[in-house]
Length: 290
Image 1 (cartoon, rainbow, N blue to C red):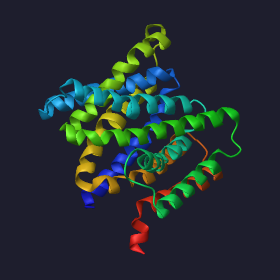
Image 2 (image 1 turned 90 degrees about the horizontal axis):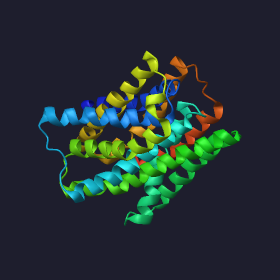
Image 3 (image 1 turned 30 degrees about the vertical axis):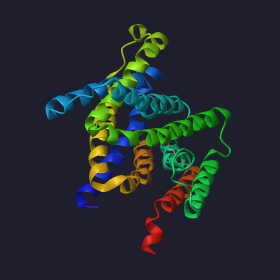
Image 4 (image 1 turned 90 degrees about the vertical axis):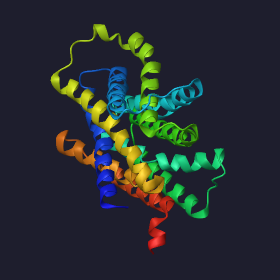
């Protein structure tokens, strides 16, 4: 990868790692669905503005929007909600480490749903990665255990989204339009549930830090992150892009420890080490270097 690609990769890891940090702050003044809808609703508005400024065509056609709706469900609505629910019980650092299992689920799902079958090195990587999950969740309280399972469900949903998202190149939808379409679809799907459950008109006015956190997670961790993601995908390819899964937990854990005083437990470090080793085996780069 070029120096520019490495810079983009680091920035993307900070933006996505920051999303766990911003959620921690937003939950101090808003319920779960309000945080999630603020992220996708305002994120869609930012991406719509980016489309307009760049003069990129908005998505058109029933088949395209149907595909975008499924992508919005799998890549935004479901995982965003599960992660915010989980962060009511566990730290953003632990949630981000469990999020790093996304490529592991992607390999399993690709084996089951596509012609990409699991090889021996990939099987070893999967075993190592999921062993890390067991280490992290060992000894957790019941509530924390359910929160951890919610994070794994979110990572599984991301894995499904990765399989589903392969069709957009054939549909001829530009990357920026794909990002807008999926986030906008998620906002539309979540809006009625949010209005019924949270009744935002009855909520007290959140403080400046909470409002700032929601704006940051929408503008930076969603809209800007997707712009960098798709540019990096085009220039560096999906294999290099997977490296971001190594960096996001580091960013999230450091932000939580420095600014929120969240402890970093030994079992979290041990679990992340095993997950990182599993991801390295899946990536195959280390073996090629050797």
